[in-house]
Image: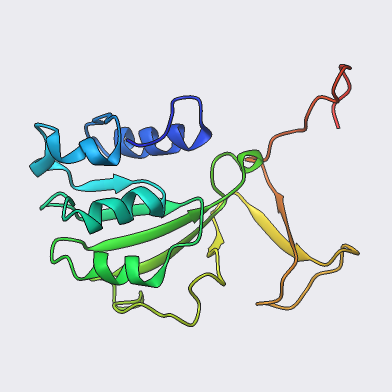
Amino acid sequence: WFSSPSFDACIVQMMGVFFHGGCLVPIESAASLRRSPWWQNFTCLGAPPGPIAHLVAGDALPPNLQLVNTGAETVPAPLIEALARQSSVQRIHNFYGPTEGGGYCTTHTLFDRADDNAPRTVNRTWLGRTIGTAISNARLRVVSAFGQDVPAGWPGELWIAGPLVARGYLKPGSAEVV
């Protein structure tokens, strides 16, 4: 996995692997992935777009890679297209969420070779404009600076609610939670 153990995304990446009976193989960096003795056996990759793009550019994607989970920043269309051209890649998902949202609170399928209802080609119209839909235990609102809901596709601030949201932060220098 690519995340530092001190980063919330690390937990999401590890638990997804363990819950599906997989084996987690920590690597030092994207550059070291191909040197792993398990490189040919990797079927799932979870990393931000930058390291994934590095692997694509270096022709270093594992040959049996089926699932790509990415997020933390905008996923460029050329990267999705390059991944979709890999015959072994079946699905590409984008995840989004601030730390306060438990690692991620939205998901969006960018490409799915097998699902008739999911994109089989890259829809450039929505790239960089959508973070997907709320996961099951999240409620989302996009609001203006005045706290009013804005229409779909309009810029605004994302408000997240639900059991996944952290309760607050300690005010610097006090025990008061804000």
